[in-house]
Image 1: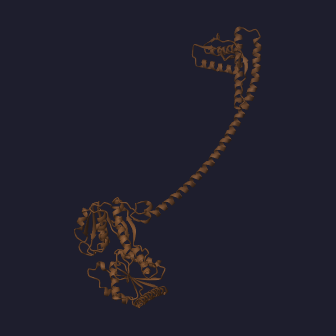
Image 2: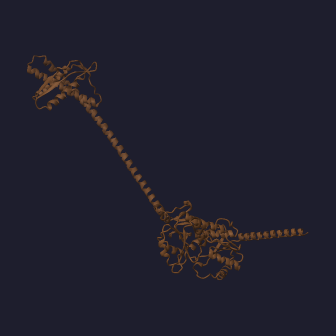
Image 3: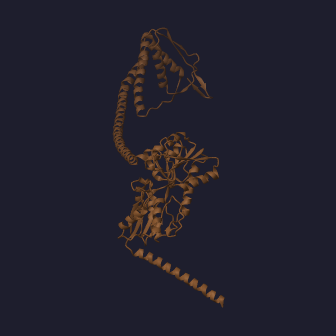
Length: 554
């Protein structure tokens, strides 16, 4: 009986749990449906920094971008708490009361705190029960939260721990064996998780390397910085107070501290890039602002809270990387580089494009000019070629006309010469005295020479007309040499020169050739001999040489 009652009791309890879960699910679904039916979603973003800081301004730009890209109609209201410059604790009640008055006519759907300061304010709203009906969420990529209350949404316990570990490991991958590890320490002590991760890596991989904590808000820090060497590794965490105790923007303090620093200096905030920081995986305000809106919408059920909400980007200062001879380990396509290698292409892309276009235009104009000049030269060459061809034709015609004229004249002259020679030959058969015979022979030879000259003129005309030929006939070499001797005596006698002839070795065998041309050669030789001999005598020798079995030459 008792067992049966216990079973019924357990069954009732199970049914009651199912009923409660069903009601809770229905209420959540109804709330989500009510939000979708509303025209606008109202997000109150509690920002933990002064809105005049560059970080805050970049964060607000990211919020604007996230609002613009949201699929829902979103209204974002940003309120800041100035905790980083306040010596005293913030009066959360006063701030909360002012916000309740300010937004009394606006239904706030979700309140999001974006860092450690604003998260404390969000916790105060939870414990005080203010802003009923609004979701409370914490979006701080720096601190790893483990809130006791499940009413505050914060899904970053695992994600941010992995992010911080990746940041630290990347630094030691670039500087694997530092001689010292130096960390800046401010009285706010906001970066304990990075401190712990760096110390953990040192203990596991570099146990013999010393870690030093420098209070950058102390006067002696600027003397200590001169002791740094390129083998040291420096981590800079934001400092909000100068050495004289006055508050100072962290970027301005870094600018003073990092000038001509001898060791590589790392930090984890993109706002410090360009001030001497090497870089790495750095938190970016604009990216965080955009993700904060996505996170707020996800906390309302419009997306999964398990999705990736980016908070950091890979960014390096190339000037610092090169200065300390470091290596960027990530793919360049996934990395933002500031102060890249100086080049005209990077620094003056528009100017370079203009110069290239101008150079191309000049080349095109030069091509047109050269092409026009070449065409003109070609035309002039054609004209000159035509003139030369015309002149050559005229010269050929003139030469042909001259040759024809010479042929006609020489033919006309040969007729009286042949008549004269006939008369002289008839006189040879008459009775003459020795002196007359000598003069007659001289006349005959001179007539023959004149006839040969006329024949030469005719041959020249034939040569121009390409009709010149040699007359091959059989002749006696001794008879030829006797005629040459007679001509030599006539020519040399006028100059007082004696002619000696030796034909004893001349065998009178018939030779085949152009006798008149051979005789012309001998006459030219004799003329030159007489011309260049002042006194003495001229010797004429001739012989026939056998060439081959049957051939001879003179």
